[in-house]
Length: 160
Image 1 (cartoon, rainbow, N blue to C red):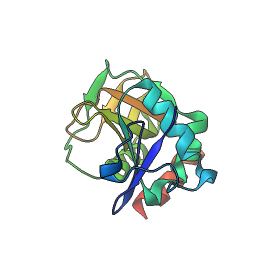
Image 2: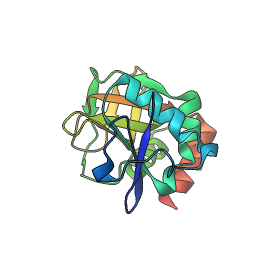
Image 3: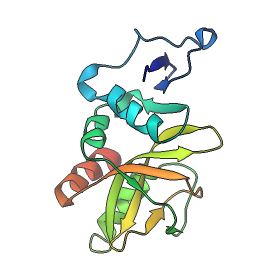
């Protein structure tokens, strides 16, 4: 699968759709060290036309690519006081308050309306129920389930 890239103001957009009008290229792409292209291929094989990867979060893609899993959104609940933005911060703060109840998960969520995978974080209850910290139920979730030490690092990263 050939991946084309478009660099925007704050993110890389990966796609399998060749479109020279939008500036898609196979040359102008992220650093290979972070496995962004491998992860983008994996996500686009599941579903969708695009993967949006914020520049500052490209290093996280390496971990998500190695240990990421597809999560079933059939069992989903919404956290109290959900708001539109800041899913990483909110999710990791909920984990910090209730570490025995939740796992912190960071990865990508699929937005069917835009056919795009976006960076996202959420919680997973011990019985595999997804706890969404934004008001939107996503069609698919693909992410890395953090162990206690990883979650502590993400806590520092997202809240610090």
